[in-house]
Image (tube, rainbow, N blue to C red; front, side, top):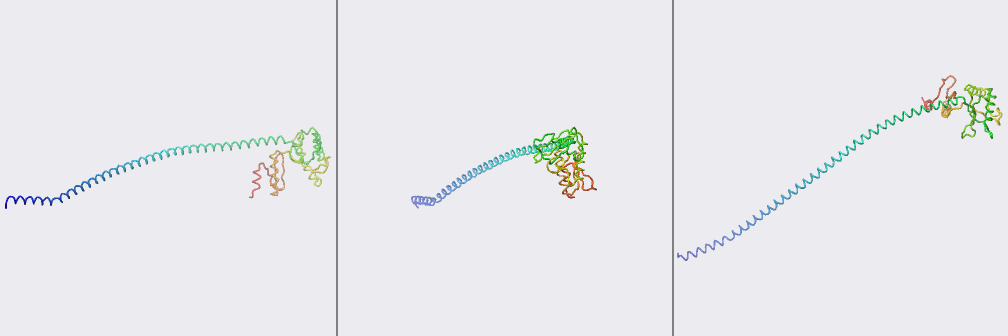
Length: 287
């Protein structure tokens, strides 16, 4: 083989070799591109994950920060609530203490008031101890004290108790809404008052068909005359209630003596002295 022929074959081999190598180069280029893209994607994903992680960390931090703030706020509210509860509890204790003190003062005041009322009642009874009350005597026109004195003296004559003008300390009609105002006569002694009351009872007992009346003392008509002790307002009310209870329980006797209200079931029963409305209520309760 000649030298020129060998050279031609070499060139042909190189050409063929180059021809066969082109696809391999293309593949390498594609592979490099793919690797580069994969690397880029990985880097992008890595950065995204890092960003997501930072965002997540930030969210977690914000959540903990908000949670801490809420906890601090709750603690503050609890502290204020505890202060309020303590204050309320203290105020409640103080109020209860004051209420107990006021209740005690009220009991003491009521006790003192009852004592004062009892003293006033005793003073009124003493002041009225010589007086009688005469009811159902009509009032004449231009009536004066002398007219009332004459009525008292005439009653005394009728029941056989002589009464001197000097034995009458005072006499007057009471102010009342009743149609006929009662007459109150005050004597100089309790003895005279008691004698007059006993004489009236005796007179009426002996003259059941003609009891003491206006015609017997030189007044018009025959209206019955009622005479009793000059009782205090409290005793009058008690006597009124006692008469109602006596009627309801069929007590035979109910009367007053020396400003006291007395009850007796029948002739053989013990004497009951009534001093308060509570005693009447207890008496009226079923056994």
